[in-house]
Image 1 (cartoon, rainbow over the protein chains, first blue to last red):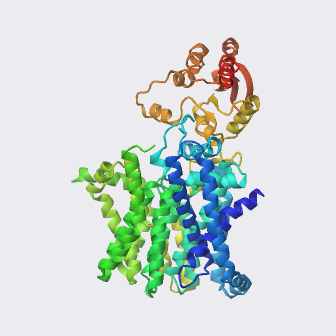
Image 2: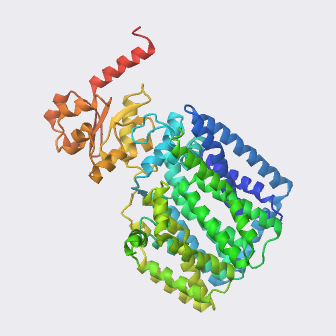
Image 3: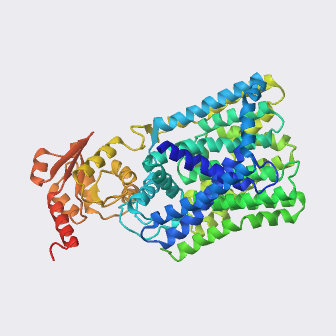
Length: 362
Length: 275
């Protein structure tokens, strides 16, 4: 039952949310990888939308209210996704794709098979290592205490992680709700929150980050399967040996996988890069798809707020500069305008943060 | 001028660890600069990273970062906007993309260069062999479970942990309260002034002086103590009046009967028995 709970909340719900989101675009609405990736983004946006007002406004019993509202809203979007999945007969397409897998694998060149196997072995090795080590990261003291306190004291960011005594809402950290999501998954699955944080979350984060990199590889090497798979193998090697300091995203990926900062550096920033690769690829998407991509960009920026308040600023900087550079390159100011519009949710988030810090909202 | 660049250069030095892997990344960036013809890829993987580096080095950026109240210790995260791994590997794959043989040679060479110039993630000093699924020292799990078995009445219990275990206690059980936490440890380690007689009595002495300790701990309502065994003397612990609860590893756990009695009296008052 505990495993079923994890599968439901960490796979089926985000997938269904992604299906619902993809249905709003007019091409490739049945992409499994994009349903998972963007489904998680919708999940995080919902987390922020529900969690922040409850965290700010509820002094007591905030977690119970959050759990009820968040679960309810998630199930509504999940039901919508399931309805679309059944109504648009996605299951037939998926069934056919599963049926085509053995044939597709047999058609791969030997070189592709070798790169695939090497990549899978490295990925499996990284997933096994999640259970072999634990990390001596002192920031866990804060984040995991917030997650545990949410469940046991029924509050959102209102227990001093140092002492456990009641305190005012921690606006500096409280807008980044990943620990509360981890508490939620723990509550709904019945698994201790530390097991969810240290063992389950990395099992989601690491493959999700590689899925995004695979989508990027698809944009970099659209015509060569061998190059895509070579890229995936080499990027996994780079990540394993890229921990040259404690500051790089690669170190965060393996040593602080479950923290919002790690998600920011290894998921949201590469995802925004992927969106820009899609927006400005040689064969430009049609107008509807372009609008959809800018919509997704804006919700990615907002979703980054669940990971870290600074992540929103980083995403705004990346989006702003990228939009500006492309606007100059294409001599089309509308490109920059669209980028600015997609930054609005992120700017609102920063405004809430700044107002909260200045006026010490508690 | 150089003074203004001092901090950003220090940030970049700390970020790269001055490892040759970043030289490989820079080399691949130069390769893309000279050879990438796809406009979109050029803008995203050549010009945007250059803009980010200039942005970081620009002295005004750091000052602005500081002035708007952001934690300057996180300034390095601007470098996360440069997808170093993607640039490096894309350059290598593009360079070796001619045919299967060149890809194979490129892959083998890349793996060797990356392995020799980088740092293996699992050699990190921050990773320790896991003792359980929780990802915290097993002593913390054992001690807290035993305390909970010993005191089944109270949800919130104040426990005094040694520094190493203290970092994990509230991660495992959110209802464990402590008289001080990581913030005090940061003060102590940084040499800043602090005033905490309980910390001094518990952490600084080689052998615990129980009179001094209990005088401070009772002001903080500490019910349970987790002592490293080597800080205890038989005589001292006997005279203290503390009651033995359990042991785990190098730690002994005791409870304070005086504090327990006080808590019981508070419970009676709260439940109305004394009225």
